[in-house]
Image (cartoon, rainbow, N blue to C red; front, side):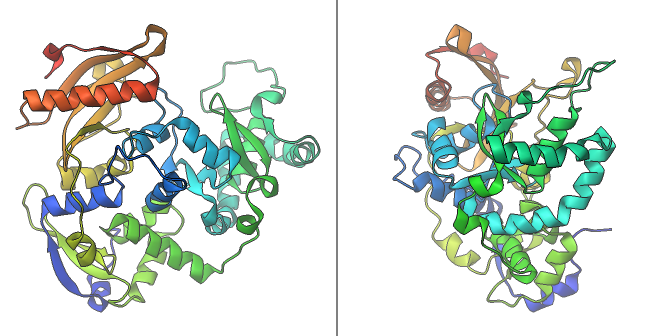
Length: 412
């Protein structure tokens, strides 16, 4: 059964625009912050504005180059440094950490919508955690809340770990850690900071600014915001695309919302696929034509994108829109990997032209480039090499290394 809404839902919205594939790619890159001048230093508040426009920044613990959230922001502005994000999150509390489809940093002004997520998912999460951990973690929650209330923020490593007869699987936690995670995922605790990428936990009311923590909205406002704000950032999408963006509402709730919309709130467009097959129909933000008419030029430079970049995240959309087939292979056995453990897509204007296996080895003060793969029909030229070397130089500054170890013979 298709997850997209039935055709009759489209009857209430107009069908006025057909986007060619190149324009559609340009639009997506624009809505994801990649048409901004990447060399212009952010003004005060500029980084926060970018994150609010993106909606959230997905986090990841692997530091093969720099961590995913830092690479996402750096790809959009080369003056970005990790300390800038820490200022917004840990000092100014303009961002909070919780889950969209994965762990993310989210504007604190959106916290009132996450209150609905906490209530909706509490029972499901308790069942999930119980299946993982057993029921022991539940009894720890009252004492943990009392301890944090009295003593302040805490880390999982501050709790005693019980002895175990057998080695833990990597997803297994001791009961105290499970209790902390459950309380965080359901909004009783918040994460004001990380140390060495390990979470610090504190009472939510001491972390989230009062004007955000105390703000409420009803169910109808919540659903309307979740659908409307997702479509604004996607530009166009199906009901399932809209539901997946925040992972706040169900596909059925999106379908019901779409049925109530008119041409002033939702339009409909067709988008040409990269393989030139029949265009696909989508719902779109109502001002889609105006946004397309005002698209700024794309920067000429080449950029390495994190595997968790918003442009890369939806692999199916990436494939039919950009013609780029991408899988992160960190969980693939080495002998079965097609490319490498942690490989970065290469963006050049509106095309994903290849991928690079590279790593920042800080102990050697070097960025190691193991291999570059080009997409079919993409040729290596001196101009392209200059753009690639320029991106490597920028990545060294982000990663805090000085040397580049790369040979052009490593191009496939």
